[in-house]
Image 1 (spheres, rainbow, N blue to C red):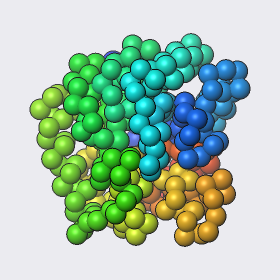
Image 2: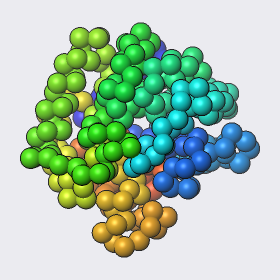
Image 3: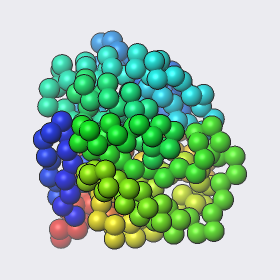
Length: 277
């Protein structure tokens, strides 16, 4: 599908899937390989992402792994602003996303050069967030989560996970439209208040969300839904991630959010070639 996103006032149109690279400015993200420090070593990771063909760089200062302790807006700002400023200094045209649920952090990130907000909370934690997105006309990732990062994996329960996530998107898209926010991506929230079975049911039916006519973001990279059934760790889950991403692409995913940019870019190329044959 053709879709558009907005980056600092510039409209970006794409007919092929994009790769969003994960940069965690946190000391406790679940995958150590994504942790970032604002020094020369950390920026080498950014350089590598760019060289590998990343389309969007997603910077987060708040760990949203299950049970993670929530940090303050002030602490989050200290973590993310230097990273975004550093990225934009090195790559002025970079499309930077801020992974946050705080309005003040989204605003500061925009001032530093970010063009997208990746919000796990659907503005339920801080309602001011959506006002910031509307004011700056930022792209927005609408994600489904049952509970909060602190509680989401305690006892996830659904009558029909696909239908419930679909209804959630429908309701939230209507509210976003009222705010004049049009550049919206849909993230079903793999691992956010879902069991392994829920996650695979969503992956199996991912193509049903295409009826909402918004780009679908698949955040499957190295998650426990992949490594737990295989009795391995996140560090060993690159192959499983590539398989899951390939399935997501075949189901219509428009953005892959990943720790490993090169593998995702290659998966997109191969799936595109297969579909063109």
